[in-house]
Amino acid sequence: MRNTLKTLFFTFIFSLLFYSPVNAQAESLTQERKVELKNLLVQDCGSCHGMTMKGGLGPALTPDVLASKSRQMIEITITHGRPGTPMPPWNTILTKQDINWIVDTLYAGIKHE
Ligand code: HEC
Image (tube, rainbow, N blue to C red; front, side, top):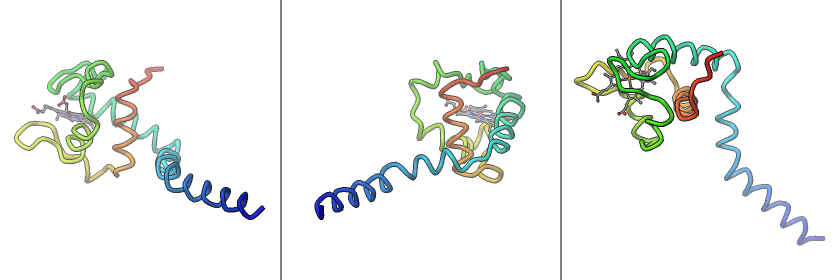
C-alpha cells in the first residue's frame, strides 16, 4: 500500500515536471487570441511573406520550406527581427507564447477556410 502511494506520488510529480509546461503553454492562449494571431500572420506577416506565406519581400514560410530550419532560429528571428533587413522585431506586441503558437502554426501550415 505504501509503495503504491509512493509510486502514485512520484508519477504525479514527474508528470507535473514533464508535461504541464507544454500543455499549460498551449492551453493558456484563448481562442480569441489565436484568431488575432492568425489575422496578424495573414495580414501583417503576409504583407511581406505573402498572404499564403509563399514569399514576397520576405522568404517563403511554408511548412516544406520551414521543415529544414530550426525552431530556435525561427523564434529568434520573429522575436528580435533581422537588423539591417526589413524583418522587424515582434517582441513589443507578441509574448513568448504568442510566438510559440505562431511557429507551431507556420510549421503545420495555415488553414485557409
Ligand atoms: C516589413 C516586411 C516584413 C514583415 C512585416 C515580416 N517579415 Fe519576416 N522577414 C522579412 C524579410 C525581408 C526577411 C529576410 C531577412 C533576411 O534577409 O535575412 C524575413 C525573415 C523572416 C524569417 C526567417 C526566414 C528564414 O528562412 O530565414 C521568419 C521566420 C519570419 N521572417 C517570420 C515573420 C513573421 C512570423 C512575421 C509576422 C509576425 C514577419 N516575419 C513579418 C520581412 C518581413
